[in-house]
Length: 245
Image (tube, rainbow, N blue to C red; front, side, top):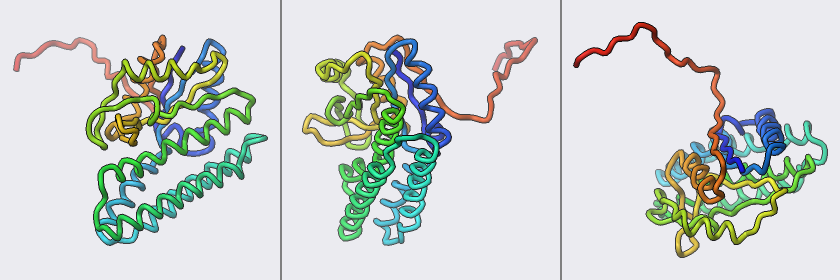
């Protein structure tokens, strides 16, 4: 079992989504693979901005429109590239999610504030959509997929916006799911559920933590954190000397 986590830049557009699917297929030839995804790049920032602008009485429509555009282009790009991709189904799902977002934002505008529980439920929508889209893509390629619902399977303790996961209980819950060995496993990052069954988040950049948690719960052989960068330098220096401070 290998757990792979892909950040927002890795699922920013259709081309990168397809690349992630290729990586998953390659790894699946060596054994079962579980994958944690972040929201597509810019989506979480847009969601946070929607909340902040709405509280402040500002217009959040530009952020909503840009986020909708990102998903529309992503879905169309995948449909163009992948036969049998469930475009209509996923477009309807995305539209439903954005309708809910707009409804909640209207409530926030009336209150003039955003309770932390509502904040948590809004800012993790991108991860939820990433998983739905990846599931559709992998199934279109002929793979069997099991999606772990982190709100149901990861028990978290703490604040709505900064929780930690009870590994022992979460391991028991996931094991009880009896996921078939020939299924690819998907789970949204950043999200868990408290003892009341309410959605909580694991702090900004919590998807890396989600991947480590899932690896522990599945007793995976390794956990890989993938990201997209233009390059890196190892900063190797020869003839270095220690200097006293």
